[in-house]
Length: 111
Image (cartoon, rainbow, N blue to C red; front, side, top):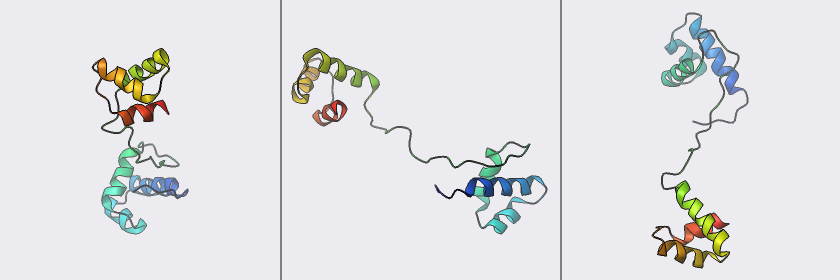
């Protein structure tokens, strides 16, 4: 679960340091009120030498699975520079060239 709590990175590091000092993952998880799996993941993310905080990583995906490829985006931009026309005309030129892309995708990329 993603959290915006500014104290979370230090809490994670404190939990990991307690585990490295000899307590079990179960004991630490119970003490801090988190699952054993969460506390175990914190241990894997930290170096064994100990650290002062374990940052919260974003859960946002890096890309959409159906995102347009860079080649298609480049062709859309090239067409716009070449013809300097509206998205409907550019879509038709791309279609004539064998590039399969929807009109809405062309409009979205040109915005």
